[in-house]
Length: 102
Image (cartoon, rainbow, N blue to C red):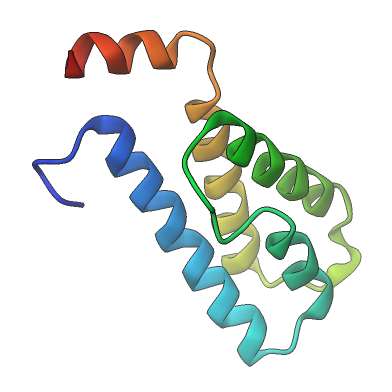
């Protein structure tokens, strides 16, 4: 992560990096169902809350359906990704970011 970016910007960068890894892995292994869920919310058009809610919802749906044959590494990355997205959507987070950046 780039040290001069804000905490929020680093989190967004981290989320995009995980999404890219999952996308590449699922394309290579031709896992169409997980790709379909991922592409419901990614790539991110912008970093507003609605974009992250959409991505978070798609990830939650995917995690509820473990029958898609995800390997252990993919599932762990999926869980990490879900946690990162949820952390960005915490109601107090924007106030915290504004205090640090303002």
